[in-house]
Image 1 (cartoon, rainbow, N blue to C red):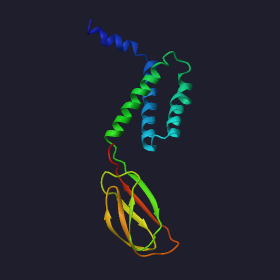
Image 2: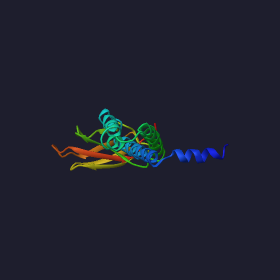
Image 3: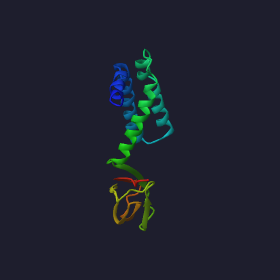
Image 4: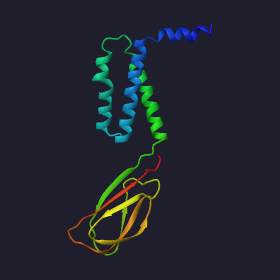
Amino acid sequence: MQSEMPSEFLKQLSEERLGVIALGSFVGVLLAIGLLRSGPTLKTVLTVIGAALGGAPVLFLSGTAEKWLYPIALLIAFCIGATIQALFNKRTVSQAGIIKPTGFDIEEIFYSIPFATTPSLTIDSKSTYTLPEQRADGFKIKFTTISHGDPVKWLARGKLKKQ
């Protein structure tokens, strides 16, 4: 009986079912990638739900009795896509800010979210400065000349700490 089970299962996988599973899987992976790249804000989550349950997928599924397979395939593919992206995420993130020099003392800047290692730091300023310390959670800056009215912009790029 066990040898009959795979052939019976394959007989039940009609082109229609395979199509619905493929559509759900495709949309699920795309939604996982989009959500993880943009961050889980309320606006993003609502957009993901709207994309998953409305629009083109609903149009394609309107004439099939196999609609029930779509959310299952979507959820499974979303979970797989999110897991893969979380495990192998190699992207860098950026954090930026503006410093208004108050004097010639050392000023300490903290990143809103610490990096995994010391990030690449770029400072755009007409003032001259030294960086006595750079860390994964921030940096120290000492201005040697200050160009008044010129904001000092900084940009840090690196990988975030794993939660």
